[in-house]
Length: 250
Image (cartoon, rainbow, N blue to C red; front, top):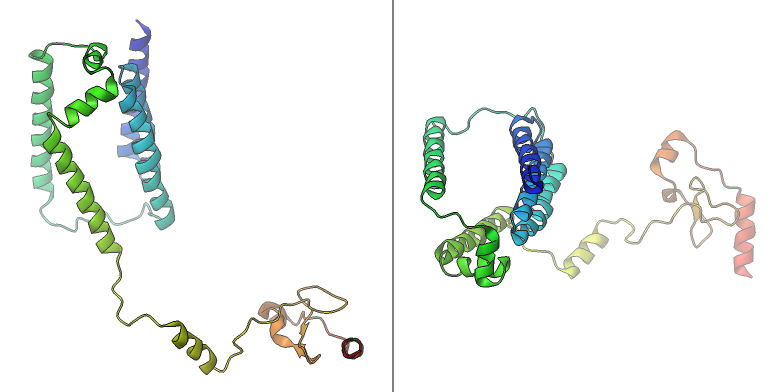
């Protein structure tokens, strides 16, 4: 066998293994990783068949962007393997089987017709007609498959708009202005500024040391609540506090 045959059988076998892993995995994250593995092997097959542009698009767009985004969403949102598998739409199994069989028949007929009636032309010869793989794909997209390309573009735009509408939250009350937020902050009676940080003391900077206010008094709010609850706050020597006040007054 030639090197191309070895690449086909190795990458094809790995692609089938990845597809089976997608179907048999019980966790969505594992399924997404198997899909990425399958797409990488498909990209190798594209490159081996003199279609480098499709191979790079497969890796950059599908594996690097779409699948990684899908995997990122799964990891952020979280999908448990114990999710309910009960059908929410009754009666969908029979139409799904019929449509699946119809799609399989169309694929078999289309591929079979292409193998039997079409003249076999290598990708090298096909690429040489338009001067390269990218030029040939561009000519086909914007001539023979223009309607399908535009329909796909409209479908993607519609999906993006639908995602924006689903993610949009309707605001029931008007947004508060800066003036209203400031008034509400002072109306609560709580100190509007930042709380003093712990450790603001002349001889200690530990978190269990209370800070001193401008008048020299101790700020109990500067100690973290867990330390206050456990009674681990450091006792401040008032003699030292008075010395600090005297130094500040000078």
